[in-house]
Image (cartoon, rainbow, N blue to C red; front, side, top):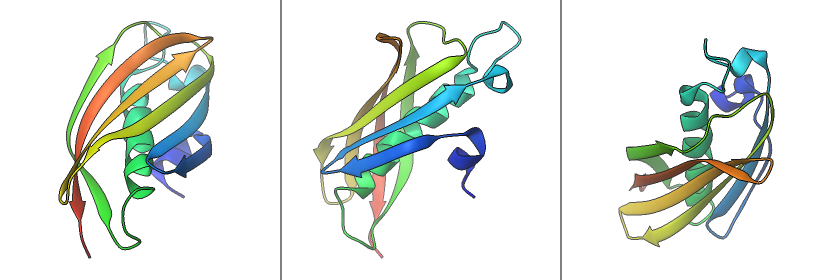
Amino acid sequence: MTFADSLGVHGTTAEDGTARLQLDATEAHLNPAGTVHGGVLATLVDTAMGAAVRSSTGEHDVPATSQLTVTYLHPGSPGRLEVTGRVVTQGEHLTVCEADVEQDGRTLVHAVATFAVLHR
């Protein structure tokens, strides 16, 4: 079981540099203020972008997050979170991605990351 699986991430699809996944946020995903914990949201965007990179690289290539910037726009609440990650620019060793977390048609988070692609 992966870390994302343990959080309840499901519905993951990845193809041609775009990945989508979902999480049904519960009370277990909330911070003391009653909103979805920032660490959960950061995990979701990192997971989606990593899957997007893997869908656009070689079979033995391994993406490793080297930089992650998460901008929290609105608080999340219990319910369905939908995440989309996409490759923006891909080089031989570095790939830049973006991702968004949405809930009920509202963007909660926008993230940008750089992945080092380890060729094995």
